[in-house]
Image (cartoon, rainbow, N blue to C red; front, side, top):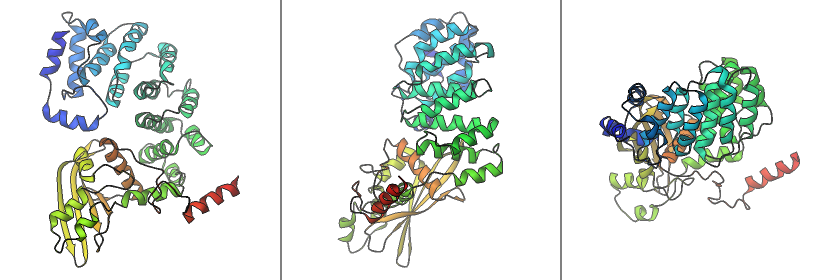
Length: 395
């Protein structure tokens, strides 16, 4: 077992570690920074070389590294053993999983044979109602990999429709699985999405988004999907809410006769989005982007602060520009444009990006926040009263 840990430690890369920590912020395990192809090569080598005590390594409870769990799962996947024995080892591994990267790397490697699907199906259903976010994701991603077939597709849809776990990685897995199912079972998934299903708004809209982005969904369905997005006053206001920023440094700035560029940049970095209180914008950006830069632009009475940073988009490096406009009284500021390389994002795409930035930074979006009254109490807001009246009419 110690030999295997030593082999792992030889493969670490500090730069890749920093990159991967941003992609997998949830894990509580120490990360070495090892690329997946190298982990696969090591797993295959261990399985073939009898000098390694892989069994002791797989069942060990003394887990230190993030990559240990992935390597354990890969070893079980590459072993030429019966499914029953693989399941015995998976029972050790699954409770250790605390990252989407672990589930999504291990599961395809298990290579479940068609004649063993029923056995594996019964096994993964033990985790569908777990309180552990990543145990539920393990079940869902297993369905994605092995059960989007005629014999199971109806059961998969029914189960996904009943899952109520609120974990981000559970909901994203549901959206991913339904979108993939929509490629082969287009009519069935389209009909499901049109129905009064149980998907929460986030999961439902993410499913639509993933299908719209897929090149394997027919163009006519994409046009329909764009019209099916669930909207209400909260979602529309939330877009504005993300863009309306707090007045954290208003008094300090207003007391100054001459405002320097550094103060304008400080206004952004030390400010907070109304929907993400108690998290400074600068710190959120630091946790998400590399090669960060701020630039102040003054045009007559207008002042803009351009933020640029590097990130990954669809597994490709990109440069993201976020332009803030500071109002002439320096009372508040807002995002007026977001670009990924040369592409300008719309409001929905901007909101998706900000959600990802918030999540990586450990923040929680306050979706039930009223942008007009700047609080959670909407009792005195006319637009909220109108919404309640409309709901009563419908009832």
